[in-house]
Length: 438
Ligand code: C2E
Ligand code: CA
Ligand code: CA
Image (cartoon, rainbow, N blue to C red):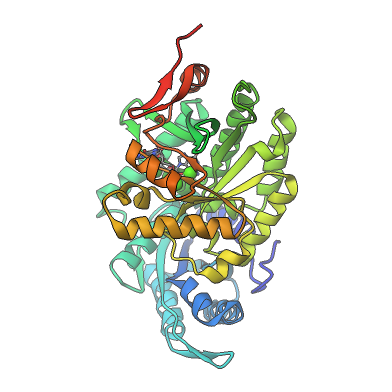
């Protein structure tokens, strides 16, 4: 059994194993099983406002309340930075699971004094019951997670999954099944979008972006199928595949423009995976790509969902020799205090600011600040979503190091990317210029 160090509860990995066992047992015994997932809303604010120590105390407090609510045979786990879960085997009816959540929330939402500070916690919980919602542990978890998101959106403390009444729920579940079969049959693709150095206009690498063209739905937006992959428990395998494909192809890139990097995105669930370091290290061992050519992109908000754990992971990844990039920077409200401690190599200015900077002075100011901030902490900065020459020029004049965006090139299949690299001859007003193919 693996324990979460801070709270002494079981961690996500061992929780999922136990959930699977409990679900199988519930079916053979003909019992009902309740699952409650709890997410502490805006938890980073407690860390921000009072510091890590109070944040840690708050997590221990919730852990002890949840343990208090649990019966002897129930299982309590910490499944993410600010997420907890309860498995309730052998309940009499759905109401018992709801009652457990209600009891926990009554205690949890009462103000409490921690290290001399008055702290008020808020959370959202989702509840699902096997076999009423699903008897499969993955599906059951997906139902509880979806109910939790609905609770947060409707500002309820907790909600029981309402699978029957919700058609989009069926749709989401079938998206997960379709994705799984697409992944197994090799229907996912990687596209590549070049990144250029602003001063020299030289390509310096590419970001790998996943694509799925479903036979039924056509192109599914990556945000949608990545989220489905997370719910279906597929995202770790998908990422391993993305890393292998990207490294294998990058090993063949020509060096006409000097050393090239390959950036791969890591979602929050992958960051939380205890096997991440081994997985990256194994992939690097297989393909002949210099270690520092691999850049792992983690969004600012994911990195800061559990700073202590994630910064530690960043250090371990850095020890492998790879680079870390903070993606979508500027959207996550991180405080400067955190920025000082993030062991990252690159910041990616979110395209929201980039796209508005020509017309909005406020966004221009933010862009300038982020560029200066990154440089002050010895990180490079890449602007994403650069769509025109004006934005490119403006960013270059602010000292931005690298740019990525439709102005340079859209993400493309690998064969096209190789051709693009071969023929690229700088940038004009309209975007990339090409020399004649030889
Ligand atoms: P992201 O990591 O922020 O990726 C950049 C997104 O901006 C990509 O969207 C890209 O196509 C788009 N983009 C690039 N240049 C421009 C531009 O000039 N204008 C505009 N409007 N958009 C531009 P895409 O490919 O749809 O991916 C969306 C998100 O899905 C990504 O955002 C990333 O969070 C996620 N994603 C994509 N591939 C993967 C993957 O392999 N693994 C994981 N975990 N997430 C992925
Ligand atoms: Ca990215
Ligand atoms: Ca981004």
